[in-house]
Image (tube, rainbow, N blue to C red; front, top):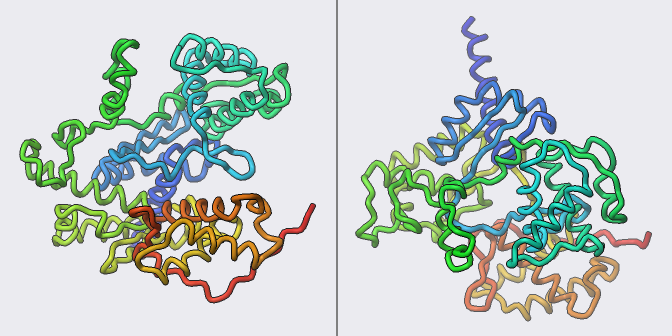
Length: 420
C-alpha cells in the first residue's frame, strides 16, 4: 500500500510539472489542439492555479465545458522578443499592419457566432474606414488579403476561429473565395492578457491620441502590490511607494520568478539590489529551488546569474543552437568572434565576419547573397543572440554577456543548399 501511495505521489508530481511547463510555452491551451494535456490541466487546475498565483502572480482560468485553459501572464516590462508569428513557412513576425488587422478582426468577430470570410472582410473594411487614425483596408490589393489571411490563420491556431467549410488561404488568391467560420467568442475574449481590462479605463475617443501612452500603462497596472502606475517595488529610491513588507516581498518573488520562467537566462546585473537581496535570502533561495523542482526544471546557478533548463524541452519555444535557421547558424558562428572581444564588436565588424561566413560556404544562405546581405545576416544573428540574452547592445557595439561563454564552435560543416 505504501509503495502504491508513493507511485501516486510521483505521478502527481510528474503531471504537475508537465502541465506547468506546457502552460508556460502555450498559455492558451485548447482541448481541440491537445486533448491529453488539457485533461491533465483540467484535473490539476486547482493546484496549478495556486502554483502560478503564488510564484508568479499569474492567473490560470480553466473552462472544462468550453474546452480551454488560459494562463494570463502579466509583465510590466515590454518584451518584443516573442511577437505573434505568421503560421506559414518561415514564421515571420507580425508587422504593424497585421497587428492592426488582428485588433480590428477580433473586435468584429465578437458580435457574430458564425461568419464568412467575405462578410468579415467587409466588416473590417468598414471598421478601418470609420477610424481616421487607421489606413483603409483594401481587399483589392493582394498584399492586404495576404495580411488578412495571416491574421485569420493565427486566430485559427489559437482556437478562436474554426473553419467549417473552405480554406482560408484561398482568400489570398481571390476576393471571391468562400470560407465559412465558427467563432469561439469565449476564447476570443481571453486573448488579451492584462491585469486591467480596457473597459475600466475607457475614455472618449477624441482623448485617446493625447493619452495613448498613459492608457497603455494603465492596462498593465497591478494594484495588488500597492504600486502607483509605473512604480517599481524593487526600487528603494522611491520614498512615496506605499508598500508594506508583505507586499514588497510578494512583488520581489513574482518579479524574479516571472523573468526566470519566461527568459532564457537571467543575469545578476539585470536585477535590482532588492531583487538580489531577495534571492540571497534563505527564504528566496528556498522558494526558487522549490519552484524549479516542482516545475521539472534543472536550476543552474552561477556567479553571473541563473538559468532554468528543461531536460524534456516541453517549455522550449525556440531552440539555440539550431541548424534549421540561417540567422541562428550565423549567430552561433559569430559568438566565437564576440567571445574573443569582451569589449564587444561594432556592427561593421560583424558584417565583415558574416561576409566571411558566406564566402566560406558559397552554396549556403542564398537569401543573404544580395547587396547588403552580409550586414542583414549579421543584424539578424545579433537579434537572435539578444533574444536569447547572450549579447546586449551598448554604445553602438554588440557586447557578449556571461552566458555566451557556454557556446563554442570547434568545427563547422554546413549543408549546402541545392537548387530545387
